[in-house]
Structures are given as C-alpha cells and as structure tokens.
Image (cartoon, rainbow, N blue to C red):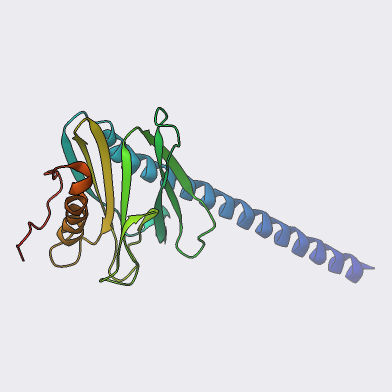
Length: 217
C-alpha cells in the first residue's frame, strides 16, 4: 500500500508539473503574440503617419523616402521578418476619398495580418512596384506596392510624392532599395519618366518628380 501511495503521489506530481508547463508555455506564447502585435502596430502607425503628413500637405510638390527596418523585434532577442503591403482602394464617387491601406504580415505567413492602417485622400493614386527578385522588373501603375527587406534586391524603402498640378492632386508611390548603387534614384526616375510620358494627357510636364529629359542618356 505504501508503494502504491508513493507511486500515485509521483504520478500526481508529474501530472501537476506537466500541466503547469503547458500553462506557462501557453501564456508565454500568448504574451509574445501580444507584444509582437503591439510592436507591429507602433511601427505601422509611425510610418503610415509619415505618409499621412505628406498626403495632407498643402504644398504644390512634396516628397519623401522612408527606409524600413529589416525585422521587428518584440521579446528579448526574438524578431520576425515581415512584408509590408500597400494597397489602394479607389472610390467610384469623385466626391469621396480614395484610400491607401498599409498591412504588415509575417514573411512566412502571408495570410496572417499583424497590423493594418488606412489613409484616406482625395488625390489620384499611382503605384509603381519593382518586382521581387527581379532588378530589371518594374511594374507601372501597379495595384499594390511591397516592402520586403529580405528580397533580392532588398526592397526596404518607399518613395512617396504628392503634387498639386493644374488644380488636381496626385500621389505616386514606389518601392526601392537603399542598398543598391544610386539607392532609390533609378526607381524614382522611372516614376518621373512615366509621368512625363503621360504628359500628353495632362498638356504639360510635371517637375515634381525627376525624369530623364528627351534626348538625355
């Protein structure tokens, strides 16, 4: 009987220790997820806030290049690689705003949204997206823009410009790499060339975004 009681007490202790371990792991994981989402929310609010300040500017021409960190740190030395996706929602009613939607998700889990922020604007929005893993691939008038510091080349920066032109407002966004020769200049100039090539529709050329003049190399 003594041995049976001793064995049962050991089993109960093992069950208790196992249960406590499961509870600790569960709450640690849950706490880590909460901290990760908090850090991501702070990050997206910061950078989307920079974009919002530019979008709300009353200047005839204003532009900025935002470089993003390569990862998000949240618990001690833990960090996660991420992708920032910027999408646009265009209103069919000219009196209602268009929207820029910033969304961050883990690079390995593209369906898991960590944080999102929406910016409304009456400006006409144009996206330009360098295709991931393709230095020569550049998509004009794209549906979205991706920021991915782990891509090749690392697309870690966002160029955004807003201009007021002939009574209308326009916003241009493109991703680019701060680590390549010339930085973002090549992509920015590609945006300017697109604007210049569409000048026929606008009757004159914008000087807000730099472009390659006709006949220049």
